[in-house]
Structures are given as C-alpha cells and as structure tokens.
Length: 476
Image (cartoon, rainbow, N blue to C red; front, side):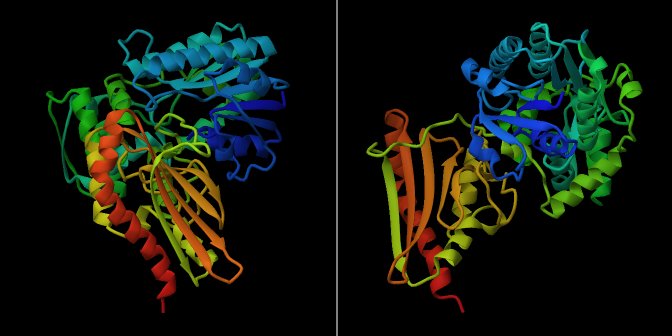
C-alpha cells in the first residue's frame, strides 16, 4: 500500500507525519480545508487536495486512488459542541472510505479505560474510533496519553506552569497518573502500524517508558529548566475553574484548556504492551523528550504547533463591492518596497506591532478573560510566515511574499475582522504602502463595537502605518 491519504495534515501530529511518510517512499495526499495553508510546508512531493469531513462529497474525490488513510482529526477547541462535530466528521469519513474501498484506516485516539467514567473529550475520542470501525474497513486505533514535544498543547501547559509560577495551588488532578509519550515515538507507532497490516482491526495503547503523575511531570520540567517550584494541591478547584486559571497563566486558551483539564481526572496509562512486540524501537525517556522540546523552542525550530489549528470558523473574505466597515491608511514614500515589506513580515510576536504595544497587550488580556486566544500564541518564527500561521490573536489568511499580507482576527469580537498590508512599487521609484482594517459586523452590537472603538482604532492603525514606513524613511 503506497498511496496514503492524511486527514489532518495541517495539525500538530499530521504536519510531522507527512514528511516522514514521504521519506519512506510513500505517495502522500493531504486532505485540507484550506489547501493554501499547506503549500508553504515544503512538501514538494505531497499532493494537497481540498476536503472537508463535514462535506461528504469532497471526501470521495480526495480518497479516489488511495489505499490507506490516517485519520488525525478532532474538533477540540474549535467548537463548544466538539463531540457532535467529531461524530459527524468520523461518520462521513467512514462512509466515503467504504464507498471508495480503502484497505486501511489508522486513527490516533486518546488513552483511557473502557471501564472508567470518561470526560467528554476522551469519550469523544473513543466514539470516533468506534464509528470508523463500523465501516467494515480494518481500523488500527492507537490510543496515546500526553504528547511531549515542541509545539504540543499539553506540553505547553506543563512548561508554562513550571516556568511562571514559583508556588502553585493545584486541584487533585495533579495526582492523576499518565504515561507521556514523545512525539517522535508517536510517529514511530503511526508509521509502524501502516507497515504492519496485522494491526488492522485492533486497538492498541501507546505510551512512553515512565508512568508519572502530573505533579511529577511539572516538577521534573521545572528541574530541567532550573526552576524551583512548590506545589500544594487542594480539593476545591473544579475542572472549569482550573481551565480558567490555566487560560490566564499559560499560552493555551480556554477552548483547548477545558477539555484537556476535564480529561485529567482519568488515569491515562497503558493497560497492555502488545504493540511493542510488533513495532520495536528504542523509546524516548521523558526527560530526554522534554530537553529536546525545550531546545527546539529556544532555537525557534518548531516543526508544528497546536497554534496551527484555527480557533475560529472559516469566513470567506468579502467579495468586491461588499460594503464593510473599514480603516484605510495609505502612504506614498521614497522607500524600498522590499524593505518595507520585510518589516511588515516581522510584525507581531516578540517584534511587536510598531505602535502602542501596551494597548495590544491589554486587548489580549481582555480577550483571554472572556475566553479568547489572547496574544500569547506569538508567532511560529520571528520573520518567516506562511498561510495558516497563528500571529498573536490573528491568523495568516493570505500571503504573497513582497506584495501582500492578510490577517484574519481570532480574538472575540462581534463580527469578523481582517487586517491587510500591501506594497506597490510605482514607475517614479516611489512605494505605495496601503494598510486596511476591515470589519464585518454580526448584528447591531457589531456596529456599536466598531463605532465605539473607532477613535482608538484610528489612532493605533494610523500611527502603526506611519511607524512602519518612517522606520525606513528616517533610519540611519
């Protein structure tokens, strides 16, 4: 089986699996709701096709000619009703796979016990596996606990707690046991399952070498980071209160933190080791996985991240002639368009927004307090951008190097907002810089919000545009 479909190729695990499949000689087709988001990944030998698991007809075209598929999709963090979305997505995928005649499906689920009262998140992961199996196609379901690696949401929570808090008052879930697994080991198991057809139709637990409590993990990460931390656990913090707390303290927003924390009441340890007799490799110790993740984060060498998953619904960019609320800043100057765009391309993250960074941070704090993503996601790389990247509380929606950058807002606003930058070189050797903020209000409150914020928006956007250009005009 050489023709492999990867559903969820833009996600944390999928983005790392695709290049490994290519290196092993497979023909890989990537399923994507936004194919543009995968074009900058450097996967020249991978085919990228449009496909949405909530649009069944798109799946038939995507699966045509494929032998096997990896199903790496789940809706956590994308909707309050993620469980029903997970079920419908799996049902559509299974039906399309049966019609096309796929030979194998490999699914990465969550480690749990069939006898415990599961959180909604873990129950949803199990239900997806059950729905895929009902297709009659041999399904290999791999169940994993916390994944340790640069860019992992679970690891980001543990890292931020260890880094920021000298004293922690924690709920009882810090005593729950888990079997963390390095991302590289997850990839070993996924590719190994594909190459061992005897794993078809079976469920396997996959985990690392050690069984640890969450408290032990936090303490070990703090020790590796040379931080001292005191942990006091109390019985009064509910999962929702814990998630609000993590939303404030860590980089992971509420929409992801809550289902993760809710699942921490369950022990997630391997009940059997059957798969290790089929797929044999040297597992990564917990401390080695942590050190590797921290080293890559320090070098800004993160292959994929949880921030790559969009936290908002896909909204089409307004067509020509559609009336929207806007703020336009246009500057003509005798500057290099290339140098101006290089500055635009570095906006956000540690580089800041070139004007009133304190105001951007305050807006991020407010967004966090009301359950949004806030400004802590930063950016994947200090200067490199690609479609689909998170950029503080924006998402890169369109990017043409040297010409145009368009961002879509993912903060909590009563509508949809875009921020676009363009440069154009004129025949008289001047550069035309255009910065446009667009807002599509949702109901009357959207209009109230826009006009209430208009004075602040005008001040910030006007001076941001001027600082971008003046940096080039007056630099020494």
